Length: 371
Image (cartoon, rainbow, N blue to C red; front, side):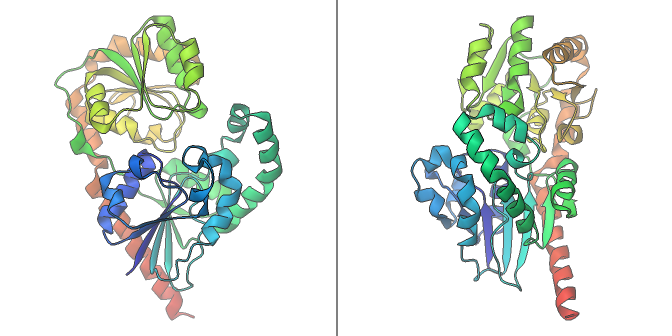
């Protein structure tokens, strides 16, 4: 089979790109299609593949401001020529599934989430942008939602990265989805021998919906050392309200992140995520997670065993979780956390995803035989 991998944009190496890496290893001859490519920001595994971009890549400032071109992305996707491919795997979080394929090809969508900023987190997104963007998005939103729903029927088989996302797929697109958890590179992390660490840690892109502000405020009020790793539009606001006990390190490489996790006291995870690979990377390092008890974290954190949940996205709840953790800190066994993370390794992902491909191919053959 000729295989095409369609990924929304390649401007960094977050969780979605780690899944793409695993798919690249499964299909080493696959070609990659994406809206925007920053060659310096992708991994060597992805860079070895032939990569084609849409016309979005050639627009001014696309590498940094690609989301401003969201209204053009449906058109850009539909101009891609995928007629030479038998298996198309789209990686959906931004627009990716809307490609047009041959009638006899198989299109499988691995969905990290339906686009948050036109569905679930629409109010938060509107609150975080300027007045001109708000006006434009209010005018464009109905059309974007219609296209997003319509393009979901171009997919033959959906695979969601969590039960949380499978529910969103059913809610917004009225489609069923199998669940295959994304892979965690367990080998990149070493579990420490005993509980305890030097500081609390927040990892990830600094966007408003991730609610890193709760961690910054709680640690500032409790005077607890906090290290924040990542970049994003919320950085300046976070720095403005942080006490001296909070340090911002910006973007860090994989080795530096693994080292920070190994020396951290606990990972603070205050946002509602689709899945969230970072809590499992923490578990692979033997580090407990203090997480908001909704979304993907409920599928990756075992309350009282690999971390603690707090029930509300308020700074007081975050503070209470930190204090409760400190009372129970020595009860968290790093080796138990490590064994939990090992259930989410890449070999499991590859086996389960290959099974979904085979199931989809079998269903496609049966349909063809009955026509």
